[in-house]
Length: 271
Image (cartoon, rainbow, N blue to C red):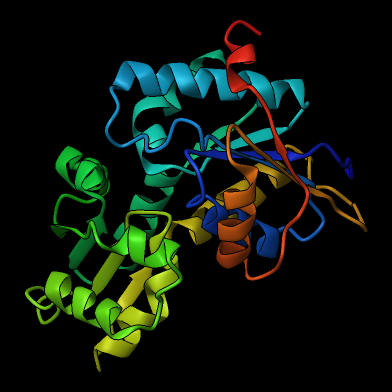
């Protein structure tokens, strides 16, 4: 059976970080149209309640469904934790989250000692630790919140001295006891090389976005929905401040983006 499906893949995040997930999907699935939504009017998600995140996620789901996407990726750790099951329950298309994918990859690749780094909210929730232990309870999972990493990334300070000092502040206590670091925030892949350069040690740094891209590919292949586009299209939508998104988005993706449209996401409450 050689069916193809040229509908877009939908990706959403609270703002910019999910662009690292888009980047891996873009790389792995070079023929696929992509629609990305960043909820820039309501970020950050990490400080909001489960009920609020589910409400926001359902509104974004309605928007992406109106765009006739064939699969949705929740490219946000908080929304993946709180809203994945809620969206899967109402969805007639596949919905994929970053946490299960990242935990699966960490469980497969670790030699036994994993450090999960993330925002304060993600670390406090212990969502990665719980998911990794659901897969393999014999692994040792350490956790460290790294609150300075997001502002450093958003300021483009990837190779500055202050970034190296921050990496050492957060990771020095663990670095000799671990074999793997799981990047539990979608901003952190931009610091992957900086972390490697800070330590002269063979540490496996796991970017969940790579596993997400693999899962998207396998899911579309399973349902004969891979696209045969020769000139694929990537569309960007935000709920506020598209100029800032263009600036940060270009940093995250490594190329200039201009086709960003601002929408009122609350119009999709009961869509």
